[in-house]
Picture: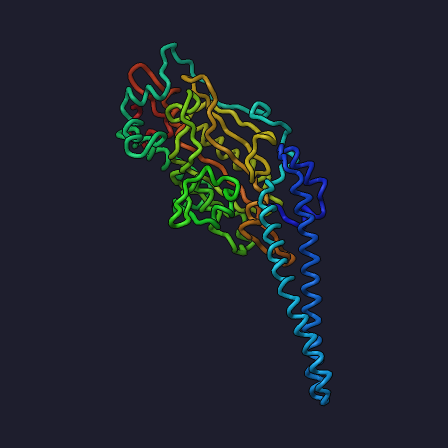
Length: 422
């Protein structure tokens, strides 16, 4: 959530930066400032009236002590009238404060000045690429055929158990999932991240804290009886570990990693772009999250991008890194890099990671603060990245490493998997 004081002091800059993000409702900025002015006037009126009540009440005691009972009674009537006027002011103030909050949370985070302009993924900028695209024979199979050939993922039974988009991993397919999860976690903890295993359901306050609410209600699975949400990523519970806390400046950066299944309702159901593992409703992912000093967040962003890049290199997958344009960024992000791996059998790039700096957008919602060396309270900055999302990694590992008789396992995974191939 944007800080109200910043909007108040930088109205035109806020609008210009929202234009970069292709945000259409610029009128909300004016609405916020109008509500803020009304809120301040009502607060001033309430405080002024309350001060009169207090001063007049004090006079009553002094008048009674002097024996001026008639004058004291007149003052009592004044106090009663003043008190009766307080409630309508208080009621209106509560309404305006709620309206202000409701509009404020509809504004997305402001894009960094490093964000390129653009409206669609076609406007994203390729920062760099790595790895070598394999040369596959003309009869190479896409992963949805490979998983049938080697009997490692069963979409039909998954659909019977739950529904479309819920794959059932089996045999060496299940083992490959476990292998990747353990390898990713070990890679992250070796880099100084503390591992967590969070709850896979969260309450409304937690979903609000990272910006899933009110922006993405329709993309999450919701349990109405308990008012819980299935998590779309472990970023949500992990970042909220420090919600409403004042952390010690010397403990920054706080580096966290977590595995979780991820649940997303928005998965499509038609066409090759969503076929097989390309897009599913439930998938596994390992996440990295950092809480950092505001002065270090963009340095840390580049560090996290480098970390994910090293991880992809160990998997021997061809990849590219894109800096997202304003129109392709998430609601909460200030700057995002996407990682895509090349699917040789599908001849297309598949997104496998997003690494983002949220600046203080999330931490303002969650009130994650620290005291600097001068004793001043500041909001920390939050960052997160996929390290990595499994389905498309699996798809590319299967497709890119296929031979006529087997699927080769990258060297880095062989000791975890216990074999050189499937």
